[in-house]
Length: 300
Image (cartoon, rainbow, N blue to C red; front, side, top):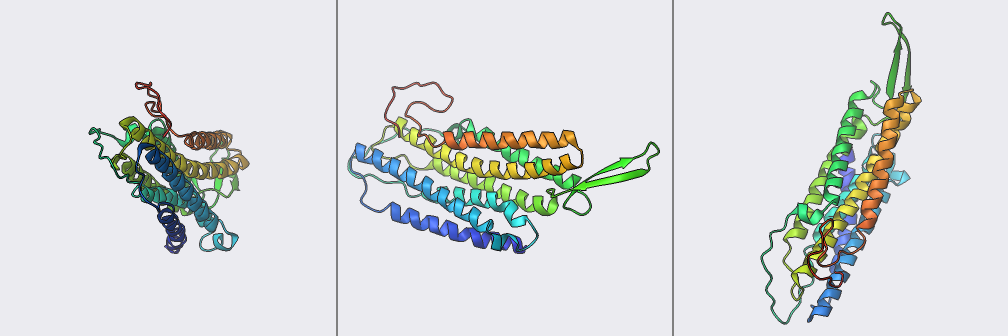
């Protein structure tokens, strides 16, 4: 309980800093023509992405500080740091979605379009869901297979008659004490990610922009939400899987150790790809994985 309270206390300053940055960076008069609206939309998207990323890094560094990680059960705060960073990132993005520039001048109508989180998320959404579900399953398996001391894994060698010959143990290993808080934090991250994506799909159309340009900006926002969440969740998954792999290999559980090691590599490389490709703005008329059906327009 104390660890959860400390996580919240350390996460709130980063979120507060992000909200202040968003309020400051969105000052000034509204855009009055099409070109100014495009520039304002690009600038706002870039700023909220940068502010959210900076706040998430601050959260991770705060929880990873040597003076903090020793507070409470060993390793708990360090273990949840990536997920608190992801939560901060998504909440910052969510707050930024409420402050998009509102142009003045000519009133422009927009067709009613039914958007969904799945459509806006593209291929990154199933990757993120798969990573989160896979990590949750792994944490449960680690908790069930941890030794009685709660911080190691054991391999018991028995004779043909069932007599215990020797016992090998190695750690650190992600038990319930480490995996339990991580599961709770992961659930919060998934919820915050969904809320941020829903905010992207449901925000009002940006006036003076064509539907194709407006959709391109939404896809850019959704890609960056998922890219940031994927980066931190993937980093957390990599850490837990790597620690488990090391312990399993030290007790000669080769199959489990190699499997965890390979999954750690996949989680790290895959999350890096998702995060880096999300940095590129989407182009009007060309959604991720969907053939172009409209003439190319300037990137939004």
